[in-house]
View 1 (cartoon, helix red, strand yellow):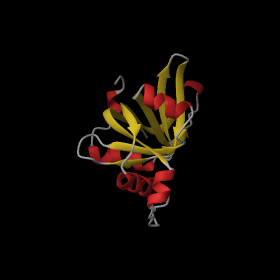
View 2 (view 1 turned 90 degrees about the vertical axis):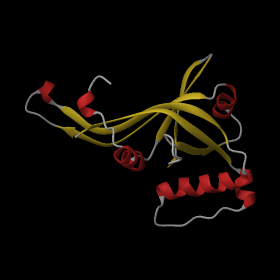
View 3 (view 1 turned 180 degrees about the vertical axis):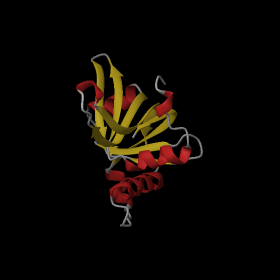
View 4 (view 1 turned 45 degrees about the vertical axis):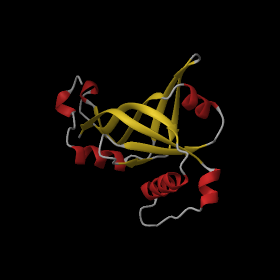
Amino acid sequence: MRRSDREVTSRAEIVRVIDACDCCRVGFADAGGVYIVPMNFAYVDNGALGALYFHGAKEGRKAGLIAARPEVGFEMDCDHRLNPSGRACGYSFAYQSVIGTGRIGPVEDTGEKKRALAAIMAHYAPESSWDFTDEQALAAAVFRLDIESLSCKAHP
């Protein structure tokens, strides 16, 4: 990381940044080039670097890329704010961001799908509790991205 003064290394602070983000962009590579998809998500601490859960369609370009090339990159950012200055080159931008890589694949286990869907809902509506039926879980496509590398930056 070029700006090591902005690097966030505390696991608790990295998780706080992830929890503050409302969109995760997942990048895929295929013969047609790079394909980036903004997605709703949930982060789950699994003891390693963690995992991200997503839901989506069972077919289409994203589902096809997940099946064909599960190695992906991801990015999320939040807390954007312009830091003005009296001179043009003095302006800066405040942000917090997380960037990483991992492997993504479909979740087939009904119990894990239900937990993942509940975690996604809890990320966006933490004041509520969500239960999903087996039928709802079976109807949804749920994907888990197992994080293999992760970095976090913050510029106040």
